[in-house]
Length: 107
Image (cartoon, rainbow, N blue to C red):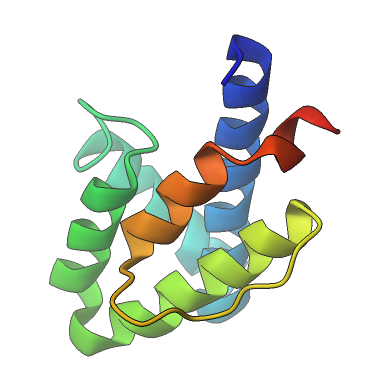
């Protein structure tokens, strides 16, 4: 993946997280959670999907799955695709697969 495509993906992923959190929790609460996450969980590894998944799991328990799914739906839509669940895939698997997708170089 080119540096430009990586930067584009990181932007899409970050925006998807913000939109999903704000959509589910409300804008103020979503922004507050994102602010906290950036200063704790993502401080050392920004935009790491495994770290995000762990953070959401600790914060919301099983409810994290709803948030992760919404993040993926938004992200896939932004990338011009439709999210479909796959057996055995976890949140980070979907994110990492999209990170390497050719679609990123088209926009």
